[in-house]
Length: 462
Ligand SMILES: Cc1ncc(COP(=O)(O)O)c(C=O)c1O
Image 1 (cartoon, rainbow, N blue to C red):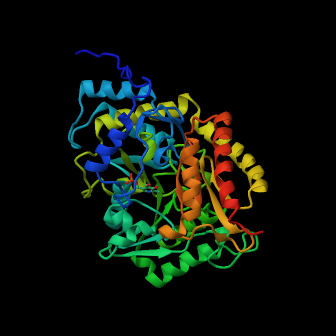
Image 2: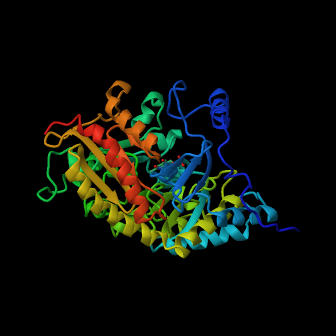
Image 3: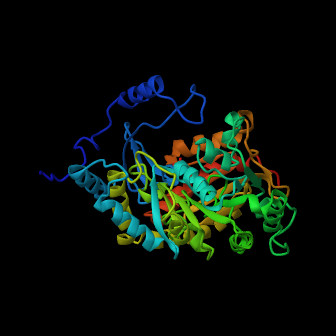
């Protein structure tokens, strides 16, 4: 069998080709549909190639990717080690049914066990974040014989019907008339805008008491699981106050409820640790993950479960399955990506660069009155822009309508013009670059952000 070395196509970095980018965009607009958008008026970047923290379009313009794609490209773009690993796997076998085994499946399972919190050893491989969450919910119901799932309003867990229902993110509202039954939502521990009118430091963790109260109303004997992100992401990086997750774990233990950590976005070094929960000294009963498991090089998800849950199914049927569970090629990309995290010390770098951004953000706060809050863990950060620091009136409200996004759209347009790709959502600007970022590249990005939010400053009152 030939095992040719794979290299990048020779034309990937050829000089700009006039009009090609436009033609590519046009084909995409004519023949494909775009998520979460009106289909008219979209102006996407036609990406020719990516390298490290940068994306390049067909006109040769460089974009600093300050959100790691969808907070998934943790190792950075264009790493050819992954290409080689994937090609090698495809030269051997590209697909086997989930009832067969491959060397790579066992290897990735073993590697995940070694980086997961103690006592979480076995993994069911899925295809993405939503399928990890859906299967976590099913498994919690099968294991406990209970049906209710407690989850937070300000959370996104995926776009399938189950995951969508578990989330409270307003992206679901247009299609929520037939939601999955038996999900109950609770308020977030959003200290900057505490829903209980408290201030952190003098509060009694009313946010955690609220969760326990809701469980009592719902009947603890009916509650299968509490589902929470390991660390909040696209809902605004709403950092858990220090003991919050420990309190949630204690509530779970008190009532025999499972704790499911959604580590789809917060997993694999994003927060400066392997998993978000590692920052809180909490061991969940299940970890549902995806994204960073392959750094987005191929689709893959994983549901890592406690030994107790796994053992329960030794003599009972595990009623879960997917055609593409444990896909060998995706797993090959995963194993290589997991090695890259270690070989290149990317998780340590995420922690160090996160601290550097925190420091630099203190300077930006002095310069920009529109910065109301900065919340960050490792490289999962978000600037919250306000019209007035005292009243905390947001620059754009939660679930803002197009006409409420005028200022924020200008901020986003300026960032793009300056050569940055990142998320701007409502009044949030996300800072979540690949974990391989350097201080110089962070400075480059923060200079662009400082320029762009100067426009928001003009819309603030002292
Ligand atoms: C926290 C979290 N959970 C789940 C998902 C869903 O993942 P996927 O889009 O791979 O289904 C996402 C996606 O952004 C996420 O951020």
